[in-house]
Amino acid sequence: MATEEKTLIFICQNTDCKSRGGEEIMVRLQEAFADNEGLEVCPYMCFGTCHNAPNIVIYPERQWYSDVRPSDVPEIVEALQQGSRVERICDQIDEGARNLIYTLLDAGIY
Ligand code: FES
Image (tube, rainbow, N blue to C red; front, side, top):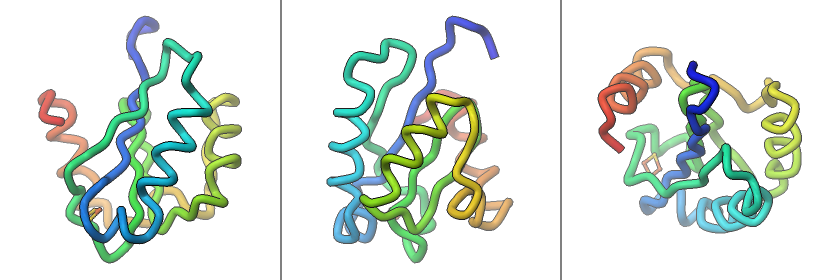
């Protein structure tokens, strides 16, 4: 990863994720990183893993958080600041589904 490359935090805002707290999670992450120019919080249309909503994908780090609760946000923020991850909710989704989304993101399709 190039040092000038920005970290993008994609938060699904489709029906399942939104109805389970995805919007609140997005707002809380936007507030937490408002002053961080190296990181951008963005809405995403749908990752296709709606049964594990809410879903968050951190790119290009390739971290996938699923079944996230608003109460998980402080831990996620801390992990991002430290360059680590919250293991208990990270990469629980099928690898094939994750790789499909990473391929789209690699191609610049957001
Ligand atoms: S509704 Fe969020 S992954 Fe589909």
